[in-house]
Length: 263
Image 1 (cartoon, helix red, strand yellow):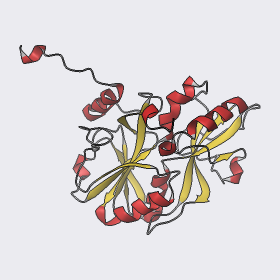
Image 2 (cartoon, rainbow, N blue to C red; image 1 turned 135 degrees about the horizontal axis):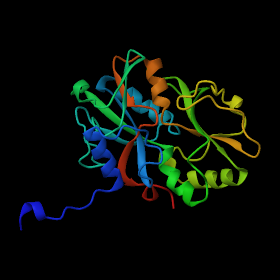
Image 3 (cartoon, one colour; image 1 turned 90 degrees about the horizontal axis):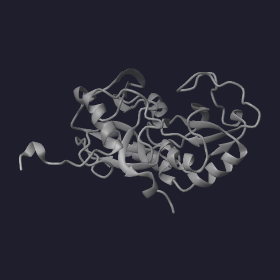
Image 4 (cartoon, rainbow, N blue to C red; image 1 turned 45 degrees about the vertical axis):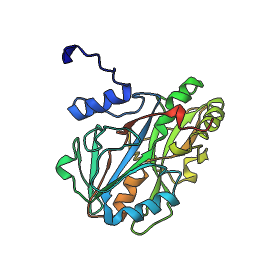
């Protein structure tokens, strides 16, 4: 049989997005993209800081549930997505130098170093398909916010917790709390319900989206720990070089969300 006529397996939605990212044709946020697959935030930093960051994640498992650590110099997440390249397969990366976000880039190969260790951190976005199947809307009324709640530090890594706030009806809130508690590797159940002031949320300057308007009647602010937290930690740590996924531009793995949750 001619090689050109051999049938090749169709790409999964997750693989398709990664291939488009690698080709430079996918450059948008990954919320509600490839639903049903686990999405991750990415943190890349020199090996000299990797142990301190790993301890930081262990002490702050709600915002930083680690799904895979890729050893120094390697770029293939063999557990989450065999064959993927973490240097190219995200839509957008943020580059921090000495605590300053200096640029956002679509390809980090020119910045790559042999001492880089990479961390993949589970994202609450992974729960969206399960929430929608249960009747909870996921397409609107959602913000990423800084808080005044301090994380538990490790070495130079410290800083405020970041949360995802959703406005839900009371019925949706009950369902979402029960459902997301089954996803401990994607932040689990909400950490707070009600007044944003209790967390010291910065409603005027969300990390994504426009300023938060007054809460409409009948909706309840509900807060989950967020995998954007390492980006605020990067500012406080002032490491020589740290690369993260840009806010809301996640890595889409091959792991199906339903297969990583508690039954």
